[in-house]
Each structure stands twice: as structure tokens, then as C-alpha cells.
Image (cartoon, rainbow, N blue to C red; front, side, top):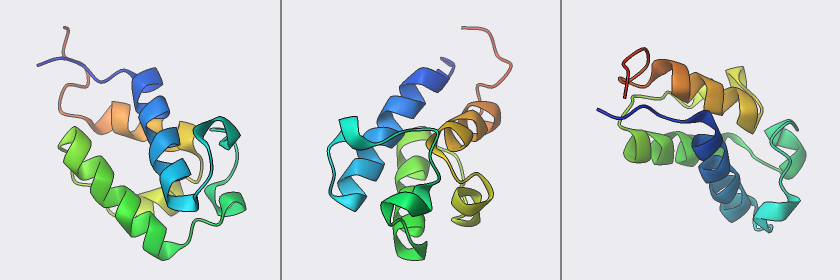
Amino acid sequence: MSTVDRATVTTWLIERVAFYVEREPADIDPTKHLAMYGMDSLYALGLAGDVEDEYGIDLDAAVVWDHPTIEAIAAYVEKTHPSAGVPD
């Protein structure tokens, strides 16, 4: 099983958030609170589902609020992915 790279997850999340908030990925700062971009609970639910589909982990929508930046969500995905701690 290959490991999940935080930088790759961050890039993927930027693209997904940009899609939801109808902005260009270049306009999304991964250190900014997602609410600043207009992310609401419906978007959070959709984003959580996208992460589940892409990375094969169970992700409650509350994780998006508990980890309110793209950087924080990417770190969470990296830490909780089944490959965490497994060498390549």
C-alpha cells in the first residue's frame, strides 16, 4: 500500500474547495479558514464525501469544522489514512 503524501492531498483539496466555492484553485489559500470562502455545512458534507471516495477513509463532515483549513484537513487525512506509518 502506498502512503498518502500531504502535499498531494493539499493540492487535491484546493481543487475540490475551488470547485465548491466556484473560484480558481490559485485563489484558494490552504492556510485560510474554509468559512472565508463561503464553505457551509452542505459543502462540508460534500467535501467529506469526496475525501472518503478519493482516499478510502471514513470522514465525518464535522472533521471539516474541527480542522478548518485545507492544511489541517490534509494533515488529518495523512494521519488517518490506512497507510499511515506503513513504509512505501
